[in-house]
Image (cartoon, rainbow, N blue to C red):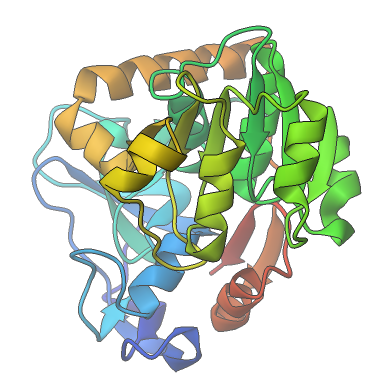
Length: 330
């Protein structure tokens, strides 16, 4: 198929947040470089990292003006100089840049073919949310059958993936979500669902664990709740894997770790995992593909917005007014 010179895209004009993201109709279609493919985007994933970029808090994030978004699914229509990657016409999902547009460039080697029988929309999450959930549970979190896992932000896309996978690996799952989202989380198999916005989370976790705390905490909120996450972990052997800071930054001191929270604190970033430990990342993706083949990981059921409504999708996400995966349709 012929590729046009210009396209519709959402452009972030400043670091003042998603309200300063606007639709343009004459953005230049990017050209794939060596090792890259050009994708005609049919669905783009919305993530908290998009908010961080829009507010200028994402480390080494793009400088405005830029075409927003980084997670895209669609059809490969062109390729740069490369000997790897799926052929033209293949529908793939992956992480690149400028995904909130009609065309985007992805690394060829990391372009994941959409599983048979899945739509492009349903495959969003296979490149971000599911690998994140799997990595924080297994190689970083060391989850094992019989352990207890506390999943924060359990109604979000990564949180739902984490609940599903933790149950698959035989863990008891305590999930935290706002009250209006509890039934969604229970339907995934969570053993206990607690109010993430209340003041009694720590007491409830201790009640459910006989005062011992949980073996593994998946922490993505940061902010004022970070200390609570540390306090819910089992002393000495408990692990807290931090993979987000949607609620703002938080800190823990050496004094805290010696005298207050004797736990293992592990930081996680999926991009760093790919670059610094590609073998571990490969193992995570290999296991993820096996889970897809086994039916443990099934097609997603995202909430769709039109491309022009991208700012609204991001503001809804920021306001915690959404559940599960959000997608934009160019």
